[in-house]
Amino acid sequence: MILLDETEIRSYLQDFPIDLEIMILKSTPSTNDYFKNHTKKPFLQFCFTEHQTQGRGRFGRSWIAPFGVNIMFSCRFVIEQNSNHLAGLSLCTGLAVLTALEEFGIEGISCKWPNDILYHQQKLAGILIEIQAQRQDQTEVIIGIGLNVNMDKAMLREINRPVTSLQVITGIPQNRNKIAALLIQNLCTYLERFRHKGFTDFQEEWNKRDALTGKTIALKSGNDLITGIAAGVDAFGNLLLQFESGEIKAYCAGEVTLSAYSLHDTHLAKNF
Ligand code: BTN
Image 1 (cartoon, protein in one colour):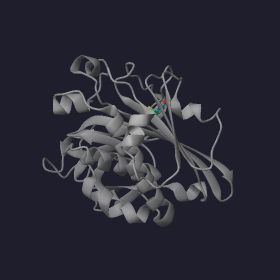
Image 2 (cartoon, protein in one colour; image 1 turned 180 degrees about the vertical axis):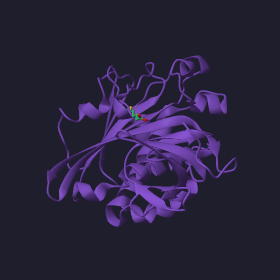
Image 3 (cartoon, helix red, strand yellow; image 1 turned 90 degrees about the vertical axis):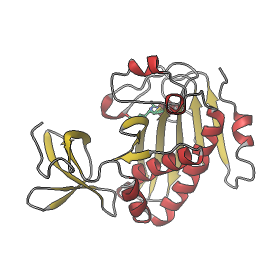
């Protein structure tokens, strides 16, 4: 097993212009929580770990992985914007991960709103973003990313959901240090673009990479279950759903599940 190594990661980042901190821990409860109790710096900070004892996913789920097998990290920074302007940041992060994977040579990747990375409808990576307003016009952002790299089929079976890993996709174990560098590089580029232009600049790119468009989906939002046909996202990163009447509505939060039927099968939403 080759462990994550800062020197090796930095060797792939040569001539990279941005100051950044890269920490690598053997084990920690959660890399997102790490930043809550450690020194905060005025530039991008990355914390990777080989193992998490209390790794967290979205919707209160846990995020579990064996030691030294996947990539789990968080990126912390402060953005000079009101937290209301950060809609779309999670979609932008998803696009950065997708681009890093494509640069690594993986094809067939798409994004599932708001920020799952899929390989042919199987989850390859997840993103957990936590933001905290510091002032009216300043927000602290912690982006946590978990990417399944060298999990084998037996490990994946334990997750009990449709998931995959780079090792299963390519048939061989992959170099996590090289992938970590590509993730850092693309996150820096995408976050800088988001800082200057907001999500509007990514809307078209997202809609090209959207795993849901044209599919009948169910959106669980609070106690509501809304069924409609996914129609991409708007300029703020809201999910657009089209209903039988032709009406299109935008949704800013919720968990999406795919209906057993897609637009190719029927234009009508079926029962769930
Ligand atoms: C999801 O899809 O549910 C989000 C998963 C996010 C997992 C990552 S692993 C690194 C960081 N630390 C955590 O505790 N969670 C995120």
